[in-house]
View 1 (tube, rainbow, N blue to C red):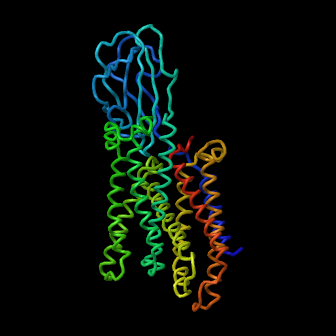
View 2: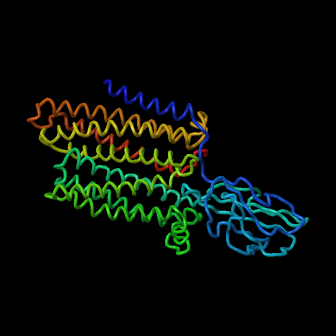
View 3: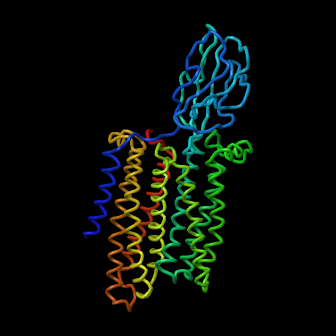
Length: 444
């Protein structure tokens, strides 16, 4: 094993150590901290309002609090509002002079990291029995299992789309001749389409995902309107607009014979559009719910961007190795990609260490929580990917260098195709684990 491989594995070990052994309290989905009336309270007179204090400021979300009597009749007398100076507190006014009886408060909020949290609180006026829907306050998301599975699947696809788009960096910087390679072009175009389709699907599924409804309600106007009200829906539309812009930019960048001045202009526009696409992910994930939001979102953005550049380059490298290419094309591409891949890995490790430090609550959480277990699986997959990628890269470089830059790539293509295929498979698994983590609570 090479010194480089040992160094990469040492970086992964450092990531693990910093992220876990020095773990800080995690930021989770929004949680109920208090309510007035409290759950199970017995009141001698009717309250004028019901207020709820949450763990984060989610703003005013219309229809997020509902109060009903024993017959299921709505007794709310106004919209959701903030009753005081506490940004994390929301409330609703109740109808005046409510009669004695049991009342149920149903709340449904969307946290800043785009995940739903629902539950119930019960109180009684007078001496009658306390009737609740579940017997206690519930903090479960209550999502429909099919909707939840589709939501996670499309998020996985959206990560894959960004990774394919990241291959554009490899083509422009490492292999300019790849602009005329139909296979390389198809992969980047597939990234544009996959990113666009998953953005639309994510927007339509967000409503049913939050409301606990099935996939048959994806076109429900009320749910679409509710998605548009929250930051997640607006950011998805912004992502879609940036992807449309990228589609035009990519077509121009991959065109042959584009003047250098125009190419530079389109590259700058592509960087801006790509930044918006990645920011739309980081601004709707766990990082945005962290108390040090600026640092966490920046780290998540760097982590995601480095991932896209590295994995996109690996996929494009697989295209380069699918047949016989002259060493005069392969060797410079590999030489240019090497420092890009190295810095991408360093950025992923450093940013991942910080994010793990902020999100993993404790060492015990690694084996006592679902989030910790998936986090470990992702880390293991990343380490395995580094190992396989390092072996493949060394084999390819030996094959090219063996011909002194004048022959063809003569390394064992069969073995290389197998190893690169394993890399792509591991990449798919790691992205799937990342998509799963993004929809889980760090404390769950």
